[in-house]
Amino acid sequence: MDLKPNHTTPVLADPATISNSRLVVSSGLLPCSPPGSVFSPNLSTVPRKKAGILDDVRASSWLDAMKSSSPRHKITRDYNHELLSADTDVAYRTWMVKYPSALKSFEQITNFAKGKRIALFLDYDGTLSPIVDNPDLAFMSIDMRAAVANVAKYFPTAIISGRSRAKVYEFVGLTDLYYAGSHGMDIMGPVREPSDHTPNCIRSTDKQGKEVNLFQPASEFLPMIDEVFNSLVKSTKEINGAKVENNKFCVSVHYRNVDEKNWKTVAQCVHDVIRNYPRLRLSHGRKVLEVRPVIDWDKGKALTFLLESLGISKCDDVLPIYVGDDRTDEDAFKVLREGNCGYGILVSSVPKESNAFFSLRDPQEVMEFLKSLVTWKKTSAR
Ligand SMILES: O=P(O)(O)OC[C@H]1O[C@H](O[C@H]2O[C@H](CO)[C@@H](O)[C@H](O)[C@H]2O)[C@H](O)[C@@H](O)[C@@H]1O
Image 1: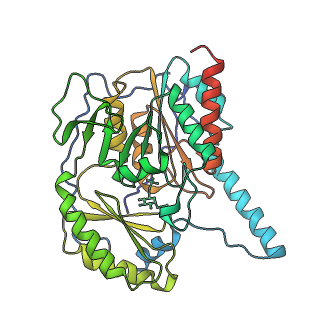
Image 2: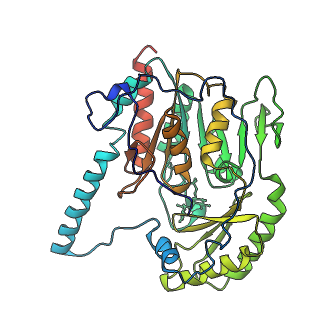
């Protein structure tokens, strides 16, 4: 798995947190890139571990990981249920001491944002739309769409999703945003000036005919991904409930609707296919196995790339906020935490270790947060 949370540094260098003894107060600055540094995409490949992550799908750790992804509360009845709910509640509230609610900490966030330009980065599944059994039906609500449209009027806003860019655009359906699909491996962003010569970055036009930059660092993998997609469709077709999704530069193999006793078979099928592709690796999301190129590129790199494209990566007067629910979002949280340059907000209704600073319980709370940002912006002369 890709996630290696840093449990030891839950500190927020935020001068607005003076009253919060848990958090460390820094010099008052949130440096973005170190002065003079210019982000240039590093597309070197990440060496795949010699023994593939799935080399022994019988290994209990792998199956445990499959089981623990996207945990659901088990509903028990009556008295037991009440006890369980109470325990869950206590565990969640304890966890929130480490990851405070972004709604309850709203004043702290906006205090820190004073005089800065907020840039918003939003994951899609589980963040803007609730997790549902059928990935093709993961629609966002009309209210959420309105909230995203509204927030994008006031702050530069980008969606960074594991879906294909085309699919996430189809779901969101808003034009005034930037979109990054395939976990950031397919970015349609603003034209960078002076025009740069980043490999795999070309000028293009969006659906409205506006000039944009198209950055696809894994373009050479396209035929391979298509091949793997077809092989996976074939090899999993007998597994009831398994679904393979082509996300353009990566492939998702969903096991949410597969009987748990067949999860090992799903893992075995994926393993048998990708063992022939040393330039592909596997990561793990919410009841989904994700096959992707081994290039050193993820949502964190995409976030940095977009900030740079927007021309706001090197200033002290920008506050990037990234909202996401999944393991792949941790790469972006980590960039913000380690760069000490913005806030990650984890969307989760269960306690989870994370590199985020704040939390929101579910997409409903995400919507409230977006609305609050708009109200704050409108009511204050900033
Ligand atoms: O980066 P994201 O926008 O969060 O995309 C990550 C994956 O999300 C989708 O799968 C997840 O949501 C589905 C719909 O709610 C759910 O059925 C599935 O179990 C979840 O894993 C999407 O289908 C994947 O392709 C994305 O990689």
